[in-house]
Length: 258
Image (tube, rainbow, N blue to C red; front, top):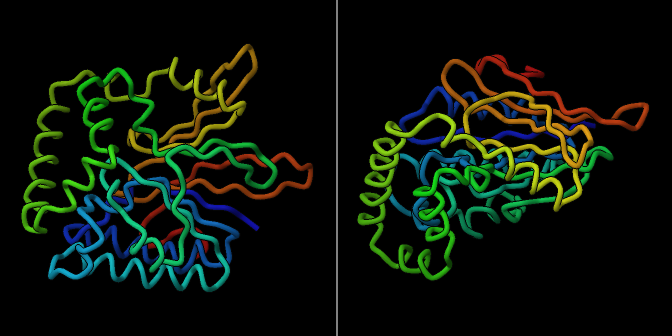
């Protein structure tokens, strides 16, 4: 049995090729897996579960996603979701419809016997002070309630403005500011007592060697999905009991197992 992890698919009404690639992945790669973890930013933007009732392009995509994730769950693959920085308003209605489980923003668990820490990854970018301030505000339940009380059309406009503002702000930031802070990575792994960390968010897929309290550790970074291809991590049980995550890139029209 295998466990799969993905992040940053950024599905929307404007990404038909990526949407279809994700559907193929669910139908061919994830079918039969023990579990699928989606570590945030499943959607490029999510403005509340009542979006599902609206004639909005993302709502049509979300309906297709729900259908396929529910089928995957009913076939025996456990589906887990985490919030990302683009879809932190995903709520219980959507999650329940998928037959999925919504996880906390940081999860310390075992996969195939391997202790591993899972998170979206934006909380690690502590040098980006303007984003961290927005993140603290946007995760506040009172702020979220205020936003969700707004008419849907106003939320659509707000999400568009926030994306434009973010793109403009990021264009002037140094690359290091938008990446994770190494000291924060080490501190988090030390607090959680793990030697394997998996996250997305930065769109910089790689496997990094880390040292925590003098011991070797690994940080696995999932890539974002684009028309040129998708990314996942697979963790399979090993005969020696030591599972090793594998970072994979693949063509959207030929995901693993297709």
